[in-house]
Structure formats: structure tokens, C-alpha cells
Length: 328
Image (cartoon, rainbow, N blue to C red; front, side):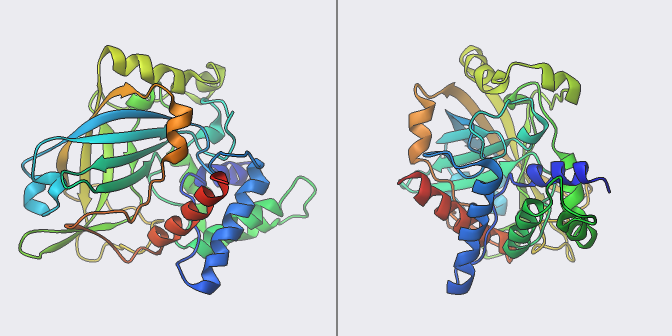
């Protein structure tokens, strides 16, 4: 496979920062992963190591009746709850043009304000599946691209990595530039577990679809757009008319892997409509608001649990490292 495609896939894959579980030996993997991102994208004080460019909005989530049947989570049991939303571009470059190929996959992170005063986070992006299955593999992927510059001998480290990790070369191609952040589908590549009032457990993955439908730009058209066309468009759009998304759960069947984010489940798996996300306004000072925001994939509520997917805790470790550094 041409090196240019592999490099492109790598940059796309950085939509979900992955590191290692919270063991002493593997905690250093989180540091190494963030270090590798800083090497690839540069160090930008106060910015995230990945998905550095973004904007913050506010809205609400209204649960469906069906959601209350599949999970006992309070999120699904009562009236609408407030939500803080952050849209973002990929990479750790705060000035990346929104229409650049490497700005894909775009991210959508949600912080639900629950009725008991607690919070719940959901982190998604436009990749359909992740390029690697573990935090250690993601670290190694970053190191491979760092060792595969224009003067590297062939096969490069990245060539060798991709040969043994097919998803690493293909995942990036599943994310494309939308006409608006409100016209993109966002996927939760990690599996979680619903628990209902009777204790029944159901593995699932989040998917968030725009009610107006997804609308994608051809790459050549996206590259011609203003560098900030997506971030600048979303605020006026929702001020005129709120943007709405369907929050869905794709349900796993017996035998579907829950511990490998490189393997999407078949499209024919049942999908449950959990409710409607409404994005109603951009915050007055997004740059200031996002400084305090930390979205953790394991920040859940009773009725929703983590699965055996190692990337969930891996991401938590890397996000913590990135937040600590940008807060200094």
C-alpha cells in the first residue's frame, strides 16, 4: 500500500487518543502516546494533544420511551437534561483547516447533566471503526509513523506495521468532511453495556445521526473552503434553528466482539433510538469554556457500564495525561 495512504490513515486515526490501562508499567504508555502526538503535531500550550481545534455548544437530550426499557440509567427515565457539546477537528494542530483531509475524523463529545447533579460523558467521532485494538498498538502506530519520514528505507516501519494491522491502513478512509458539523454521523467505536431494571445486560455501541441527514463534501471541494468554515458555521446555524441528532445504540448479538474496536458489527444488527440531542446555541467564549472540559469515556451512570474493550481505559489514561499537560 502506498506510504501516502498509510500516513493519511494514521493522522485520521488519531481521532481517539489511546494509551494503556491504569497499571504502573502501562501508565508510561499514556505518556509515550501523548509524547508521540506532540512530536507529530507540535507542542501547543493549553491545547489538547489531539482534537485540539474545536468549539463548544449547549443543548439538551430528550430520551425516547424505548430507551427506558433497555437501561435503568436515569438519563433515560425522566425529562430532557442539559448537555454540553464539543465539536472538533482531528490532530493536535489548533489551526488546522477544517476542510483538510487530516482534519478528519471530526469529533463530537457530550457531557450530560443528570438530574441528581452528576454527569455522564459520551465521546464519538466520524470513524466507523478504530485502526488498532489496544493502547499499546496505538502507541506503536504513532512511533511507526515517526520513524517513517521521507528518507526512511522501504519497507518503512509504518509499512511493516500496516502489514500486520490491516485496519490501521483502512480506518481513516471511513471518515469524510461534512458540509456542516450538524450534517455528520458520529460513531462510538467502543462497546459499552446497558443494564436494565431486571439486571439484563446488553452490549452496544453509540451512533449519533443528524436528523437532516449526513451531507459530505468531495475532498477537492472541502480543500477549497475557508480554513474555519465548519467551526464558524455551526454557531449561526443553531442560533437560527437548533440542530438535532438521533442518539442511537447498535445492539450486539452473540458472538459480536466487544473487545476489538477495529471490528465493526454487521449493519443488520438492531438499532435502538435512545432519544434526541438538540444543539441550541454556541457558548459565548468557546476557547475559554473548553479549557475546563474533560470528557472521559468511563464517566458513566448506573445502568450503563464499560465493556471489556481495552481502549476505553486506554483513552482515559491518555486524556488524563493530555489534560494535565494543557492545564499547566
